[in-house]
Amino acid sequence: MHPARSFRLIAPSGYCHNQDAARRGIERLQHAGHRVENGAVVARRFQRFAGTDAERLADINALAASDPLPDIILAVRGGYGATRLLDKLDYRSIAQRLSSEPVALCGHSDFTAIQLALLAQTGLISFSGPMLAGNFGADPVSAFTEHHFWQAISSPELRVNWQSESPDCGSWQGRLWGGNLAMICALIGTPWLPQIEGGILVIEDVNEHPFRIERMLLQLQQCGILARQQAIITGSFTSTSLSAYDNGFGFDTVWQRLRDEYQLPVISDLAFGHAPDTVTLPLGAHATLDMSAGNARLSITGHPVLR
Image (cartoon, rainbow, N blue to C red; front, side, top):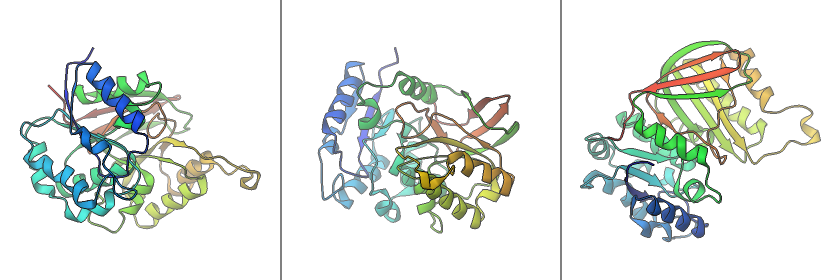
């Protein structure tokens, strides 16, 4: 059992088309003894979005005046819409308030844009992890995902271990950052992409063929971002299939090209992203990545920890 926590829902992206999953997620959290606030954002809708730009922006900017602060700020779902808000967020006020006491700001997918913008503008560390509808409302819910979520937001030294088929061996240290690869690339050339030197870049995506993933990684390389990283960790790349035309060109090919062309270690197979099983990672925290004989380990410190 976990201590009862307060959750505040935010919906900065797409309309929650799976209303049943969102309701199921709220009911599960409440049944476990947690308090869930701001549930009205789940049903809110304007065009394809979870409300107008002004409404969705207000969800985020209102956090600056939140008193008391919730323990956990949880995105309802991803989709599209977060990047429409980036030039109007009150970064300084939000970061000042959320840094005043430990708060877990959590989501992934399209929410990566807001997380990286906050990191770039203020250094605020947030958690790339589960969301209300897709994870807490999943049927069935993933015990793996729940375990790693609670572990991440309550462990001063977070350790994540997994089996990797990567041929690389070694130890690397740096700031852990990244998230959804398409969203990272969408921020290139803007003030919203963190300039991380010596980082450990973790990436995941959904509905993207290996050649599209390679194209995005080439963009990161050609603008100098990959050259500034210590290592790459690859999470789940789901909902895509290869054809006879690919003729053996798959994700393993993409990862090996990064090693061969750019001498970057690529540690693969982390359960992270859009798959049902996902770990939760604090973006912007300090990490040590170790890889030996198929065993990968992340040790992470410096992130917000709920009391």
